[in-house]
Image (cartoon, rainbow, N blue to C red; front, top):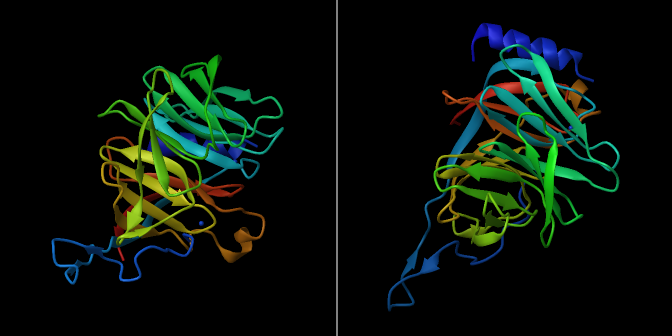
Length: 278
C-alpha cells in the first residue's frame, strides 16, 4: 500500500463512526495408524508457529462489531453484526471515500462477507439467509436459504468456490452462483480436530481463519484441512484499549503484497501486519 493510500484510509477510518481453540480431542497420541501393523503410528507434522509483525497502525471504527473484512479492486469491504446494528460498507482505499453503506433490517444478524466477481455474498448468524449484493453499490440482488449457522466466508477464485465456516471445525464449500453446498473439509491441527473457526480469508489454496474468543489465526490447507500455520496475534491492543474491545475478528489480505489488515470487534485500531516465524 502506498503512503497516499494509507493516509487516505487513515482519514476515512477516523471519520467513520464491527478466540484459543476448544480443547482438542481425538487420538490421544496425536497420530494416525498406518499400514498393516497397528503398532506403527505416524505422528502428523505440527503447524508452523507464527506471529504478527506490525507494519502500520490505523484507526478503526469502535462502533463496528466486525464480522467480515476483505479487499477487492481497491475497495475495503467490512460487515458487522448485532441485531439492529448490522451493516456492510465499502471504502475506496485510494481516495479514502466511503462509496457505499447499507444496513441489515431486523432481525438479521450480519456475519462474514466475500467478493465473487461483481457480487458481495453475506451470511447471517442464525437466520439461515445469505444475501447477494452488487459489489459496486451493495444493493441487494437476492436472498437464498441455507441450513445451520453462518460465521465466516471467503471466495477461492482459483477453484471458483466459496468457503464458509459455522463455528465448528468444518469448512463448507459452496457454489458462488447458487450458494448450493458442494462439499466440505474437516480441519485438523497436528492430527487433532479444531473448532470455533470464525472469519475467513482465502489466499490461493490457503484459508486463514480467526479462532473465536482467542488471539489465534490458523492457516489451513483448503484441500486437506490440515493446519499449516498457527499464528499468535496477541498483544496488538494496549491493555487500556482492551476493556471496551471485543475479540479479534477480521482478516483482509492486501493484494500485491504479503501483508494483511487485521482488526477486531469494536477495536479502535486496524493493523497492517505480516505473519512471520515466532
